[in-house]
Amino acid sequence: MIDILLEAEHALALGFLDKAEKLFSQVATNDPRSAIAVVGLARVALERGEDAGALELVRRARAIDPENPTALRLEARLVEVAAHRAGAAGPAGAGGSAADDEGPAGAGGSAAEQGESAAEQGESAAPPRKPPRASPSKPRPGLLGRFLGRR
Image 1 (cartoon, rainbow, N blue to C red):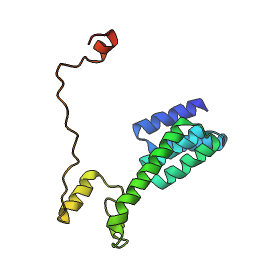
Image 2: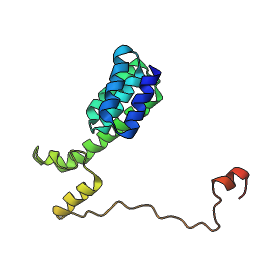
Image 3: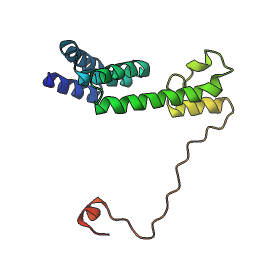
């Protein structure tokens, strides 16, 4: 089973989602207690933009192995994203129609697509600001310098 899981991970890393899904499914079918395979299926769903399906699979994996660190992190992130989307869609979509919810923001579109949509509606589409960088008074050592104790 480990070989199949490794092959599935490799396929997922290369973007071969159908192959990865097939391999993770094969492991999950042969070993229904494999939380790793179910998390793999959740990651495939996430790559496809199927957040709800990914969350369902991740919760299934947590039911199998409540301490699985990957499942814990992925579930927390998916819940956070869902809450953010619900909060972002709430005020804007409160008086809108169902068609409004299907726009780039509701479909998980990129920030550029969302910015273009806002610009088309006459709203400000300024890019998010980065915090200002403090200029250090003296150069900071690199990783090797810190490792060697040079300050």
